[in-house]
Image (cartoon, rainbow, N blue to C red; front, side, top):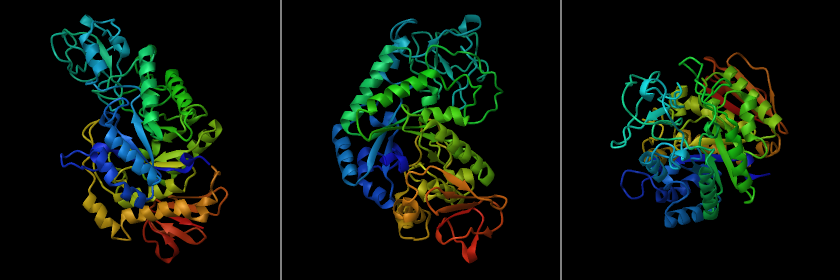
Length: 480
């Protein structure tokens, strides 16, 4: 079986992981210094990002990269990197050239510049919001001034009559201008970056926002009300365009020339069947279902989301992949109401068929709020806390280590290999229980306020104390 089909992937924001040189920002040498910790934790792969922190689109300092890759591979760890296929930063050479160039120029055509609507072009080309909830368009000022964000009607209190230039789309958020996938230069540059990473020896790519890739068409106003959920529905004109699937098929074709290299991505598309297309044969190896990173701690909701995703992914011939983490959002422990709930949900995800992704530091149970912006890093990981938790067998970190060890080595999990089905059992209100196909492994979760009887079987693991054969609230268990 391919290594990635059952992998645990540990997402690392290099800037927030480990600072090796004392400048207050994490770095590649810091990641290398902590490879022993990742071995001890028991993950299969690390995914490094953001792309800008890796020195742009396909470049990185050779010394730190070569040392990190070599030591990670010797430790049995795969290394993936982030790829911003759909956008650059506003400091990128291409974007600076585009700002300096006139409308209609080749430099502008690499991005999605459009004239505004209304008197003097003072209104944005569409009424869209960015995926982070802010403005989706920024207007260039007159050529002799630096760029500034202009919100326009529907996005704030912009001055629609002010003089300015074209507007450019930054659907991922302010400071992240969208590339134009109708431009051959964009295709060629992405191919160059992709080949560069493969030559560097990385084991795969995590593609940012594949559902938000854009070409020249599809500029309808958004008809939906301002209040909307984090996942895109079928009526969302901003995302889920055909060009995104075309890009993914092109990336996959290149990766298929390199055995065991993978492409993964979080896909924020609500409809299960539309989501599953991203993980169909010839596109992503792992399309990661992100709705569990937004849902409440409620067994019925979790079961529904899991069941719908499994059915859709199976129909598309893909491999399930799960996460409870959202890098731009609050930590799972904060969002769900405490580290015990976050660990309980992680215990459920680790029992499901397929791969699991979580963010660096989540294993410590932090309750950090969301970062300050879509590109802002979290605080540096608290290594003193990690050291303390390693010495406590009942800590959140130690329980993560134990769960990952069992998942990797216990016969009950090994018997599940190649089986992507689950059998749901009846459960008390506020609870769920399922058995993995090919095994006697059972997982149960209690999100109700009262203890409930454990299912029949021998207890293999619990995310918290479970005395007297009962499963307490906010706790999950594995049984054989």
